[in-house]
Image (cartoon, rainbow, N blue to C red; front, side, top):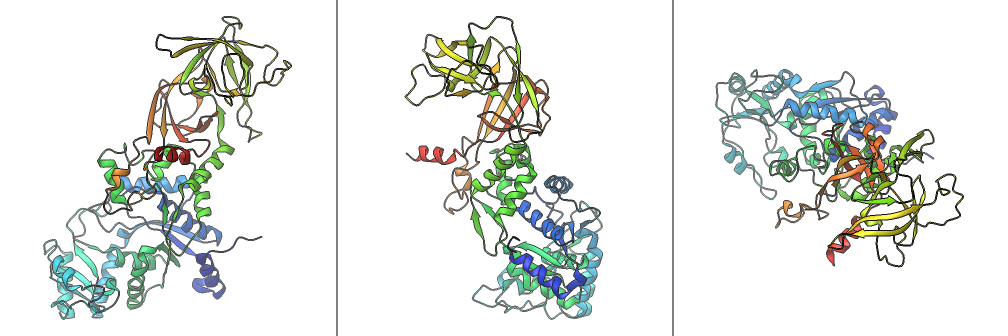
Length: 557
């Protein structure tokens, strides 16, 4: 059964049936290179590239670089990396709005020649004051009646750098009484004597976003210009520029932006988190940036799955972060190899196992993947287990290691806990056990029943490593939803826990940076980019189960 079509797909299919644009579908992803991409951009990338692929079309990557004050080549490169990582390719269709600066200038001149644009000498405050309100019409500028020849001369002077920044702007001449404030003689060009990352010092004026965006779409013959709902009120202006300039009729279609609880996607607020030290950088694994999610161990497939499950809506809503976490677990369960790691070690001495002897026991890499094969784990007299996997006086339903009980070691033997050693403060220093040699995993003939199965590593062979345990960055579902409180007051103090001395099985030393693994019973982890052969660093991507609800319930008691 075919999946139901969302409203954008329905529009495209209708256009194709009518033979619009010669049956072509051309979309674009148009980021401003003034920051790092986040989860909301990921949805837009998946949508723009996805519908083009579905209908045999193409997608352009275009940087809308109209504000050189905030744009940097660093952002350009990070955006390209993120899109490729998500699995999409713009091939040879990499463009910049700055590629069209000359064409955009000529189109602005055309508006002036049609009597549809004028140079305004008013200050920014005067223009804002004269614009009016949602209930009161605006006031026409005293410069609105300038002649076409005077406007052409002044606009050329703006381009030539004859005037100071802020002294003049070019405005469209539309309707100062329009109920849509975007149509009240919007700015088209402003003077900005700032070097541009692409054009250097060539230009003294730069187009405003609304003007450049609509006409860049038209220049590229974009058939379906997909953008988020905050641009819905800008659509009449988008269409006005296209109509008055008689250019290719690109169509703007708005969809709901992606809002995920426990996340924020405001670039300004994300920048505050970085600058004020709440996170270590734009790629901090707690950040909702694509680079942060990549470093945390999220996979491209999981983010694409999330975008597909969220779907395309016409109205804004908030998506539960647990859906994203489910998609990550679902993908990693199938692809991540299993390994052993002990995060809070407690030594166990197997007193009847021969000293100096080592067995190499087979262990399956991934039970979900029959082609993943096996590895070998060293087993010896001394092993580490998790400290909370032993209790000297356990409750009734505790099935892990305790005095007098049998417990199985994953891929190894059944142990019987005989004794333990405490220090002067009553802390457990060491546990003494005996093993049954007939209880080897895969060939157990012992007849012993052990309810609990524990993970472990050999003390002699284990590699020391560091683990960074990441959790949600905020404690509130909508951290920026209360105007009375700063969103940083909801930063989760437990969003990062660093364990400086964990122990991993020796095969973990062969993991490549960025490779995802599952530490048995402890969650999904990825080898961090700062890791070296001598200093292994693992980031926890996500726990095996959603424990957040339990944690929140505990805090509220």
